[in-house]
Length: 516
Image (cartoon, rainbow, N blue to C red; front, top):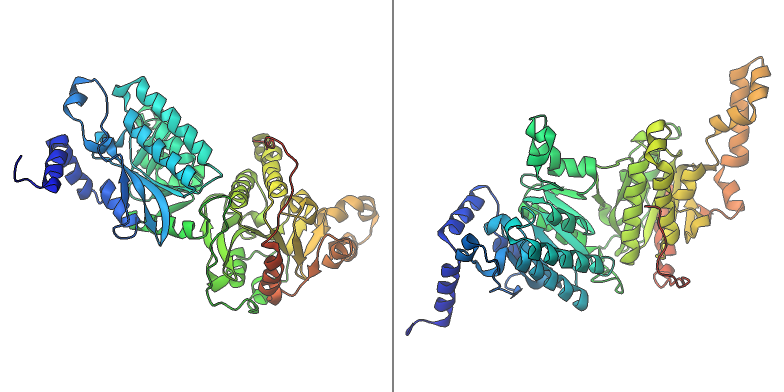
């Protein structure tokens, strides 16, 4: 091919490797409002920073039909580049190639880039858009997928892993995406299935559709797989970039400090009006959080799942912190199975990436009922308690109102190794609420009383003064201080500064046995 430049020769080779059918599927992909794999990678990364690996890899299947169609890259674009000035590793499945299915070389290519990320100690962002295993490649594809799962597990806890699900992802691909620290689904096209929906009786019978079974909203509110739902593909990329901004590159690094200009000693006067004086009235804890953190910015995760507890990222004086808080306006802030699992997972994520955990407590207890008891609230509630006790990052706790019983212990109490615990004057730390305690302790006295209601009120006030007052807890060493709500931000930042160098010795062991 004399007179042909190397770049033209490369373009010709790429065209020969792609069939006409493949080019038609790219057109259909764009018509549906979705970007191609390369377009997604370039939208994710800083301009001209992408370095591709294994660009010429092809599948090795001996199947006759596949042998005639051997596209370059085997349906996945992988490499590394810069995101907001930080080097990251990334890949994107290409739905226009065999519908993004995972064959042997496809899986090996992702495994290779994941291994590169682990060695280089760089975050991974994966863009998933594939219909599971490439069945016609057989066992070689299955074996390579096993290798991929193994390296993803090895990466877990060492480097941040973020998955963007921007199309239909099923089978083992869904499992691989589920191993991530954070899963973001696109609202329009993002779907995840363990098995093909065509094998699900409810879908076959027309009782539900595919989106109801495995769409973004279902995984955000029902299964808890999706930490956030994106409006479109660009929004998903922006969410991933924002999450990553709170995280370090790897578990041995510290998160980046971002000075917002918000004064560290700013008073939070609005807090005095947010929390009602009546302990039985609900309020929005997210307003408390936003008033305390830098620039009112709180990135809430899993907002539609177990919304009786809040988790997410924020900054205090520029430092990344994880927030865990009861939500009194939902189930009165009670802990249940889903809330316990949600919080435990987030606490452990913060712990592996050296992000301090700030806990806001207003919890009347664990949610009662047969559904919770038979569902394993004891086991699941223990996960949250375990996560707090196991975490070695700085742990700071603010009691805004109720802190009762076992739920108080599970919410980063001083006894589980929390570093700094304070309460507002409205805080009530007790075994249970005053009403319930009086009914148990003074049952006979109330039965014999001529004026039961008046006697009950007197006994409730007496119980609160003896056991529910935060100063009683402070005198016992369960609290470091009782502070005014307006001083919450300043006190937390003052306590956090020396804790940045916190190091905790842990006795050698393989790992603990969390009650899964």
